[in-house]
Amino acid sequence: RAAYQRTVWVGKKQLLQWCMDELPDAKLHTNKTLALNFYNNNYLASLIGKYCEFEEASENSQDFLVVNLTNALLAAEDKLAVKKTFLNPSDIINGSADDHALLLYLALIKRKL
Image 1 (tube, helix red, strand yellow):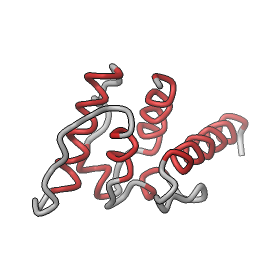
Image 2: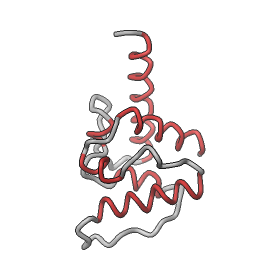
Image 3: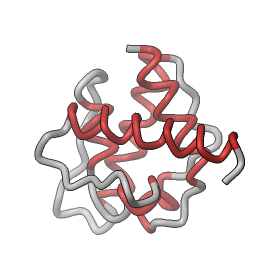
């Protein structure tokens, strides 16, 4: 691998380790992509919710995960000034989000805390 690829891999691994430390009950794996780690779960919203209050969606809602993550991203934008412009909540939930966009977003969140 090229040097920049190793650096990105190390950065991703460190950010996932930070997420695991923040969310000890979450089943996150450093050997999976960020998109797969946040696929079809509430982990990213829970992580943001530790630092930014937001109104949680009703679990009875058909789009609970997407609505909840949208609310969390908007709260992070308001409180931490981390823009969600390059993230789409439905892409994150369905596992098709760009890994580099998630990497940058998590790094910005961590830096703001």
